[in-house]
View 1 (cartoon, one colour):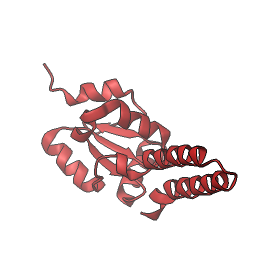
View 2: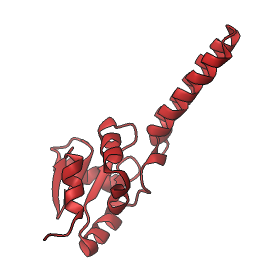
View 3: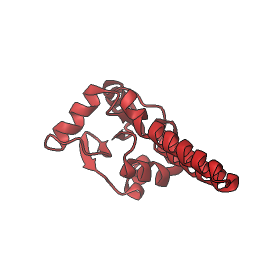
Amino acid sequence: MMRAWILPVLLLLCGSAVATAQILKGNPVAAGALLLVFVLLAGMNSPLIFPRSISALEAQRRSAIDGRPIVFWRSGCTYCLRLRIRLGRSARQLHWVDIWRDPAGAAAVRAANDGNETVPTVFVAGRPHVNPDPAWVREQLSPPA
């Protein structure tokens, strides 16, 4: 679980150091602006921006019942962030599994990707799709006509 927070914490520490240096140089406005940028970057790379993760087994159970796709992701992944942002509110309809928090989820991703933990990997009806287009994922949420 700690691994998911390493990048956001490092961004906050670096932002604090840069802001402190700017304050010592007499630039409080620049310090505030830089600190804000680093806080935003930390927030975007943290697990907080993603819907609450569940275990891979729970996601598979829920997906079998409601047919919704399962997204395997990890914090710090720019492709996962892109998918999450482009899905918008639709992202809450998916089942999200953080592979850094769930060993079974990491194993499922490795099994689908020749031993690699390539994310985002989206399982739709039991079939894996690596780094799919967000528009396609949104289409998978719509019931067939």
